[in-house]
Length: 154
Image (cartoon, rainbow, N blue to C red; front, side, top):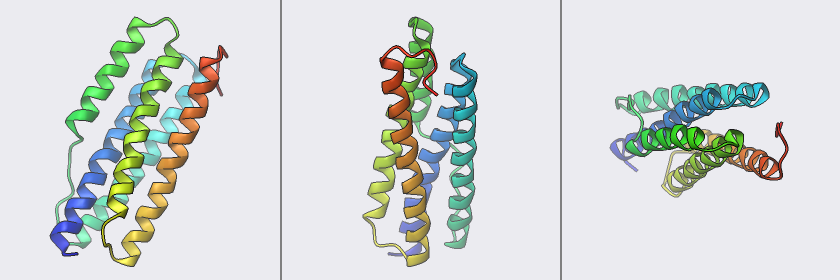
């Protein structure tokens, strides 16, 4: 794979990771549960760290890191805000939307890992993919707990 293609793959992951960081921050703002806020803020920081690592790799391969998120990510955050404002069970609404965003991140990493990548870069993406899967699985567990009527899913 040439450097241009590598940079393109990495920039796609930067966009989805930035969307994740922003999405988790939105979720933290939209819940009134202190434990969930803390969890979401922690995940936002983790996504931001992924963006930094990916940006370093983009530069290593001669590119310029993407500086924005996706239109879908912006729409997703707006949907979280709207849905939360319209529902009485805001933790559940926030978790449902957060789970959708994390599912998109998992798919993005799966797509990137289908490409032929240098070994060191593949190792980094494998590590970040595992993190995205853990985020998705944990958010899904929290969502399921909230669906069963627990006031605080954490």
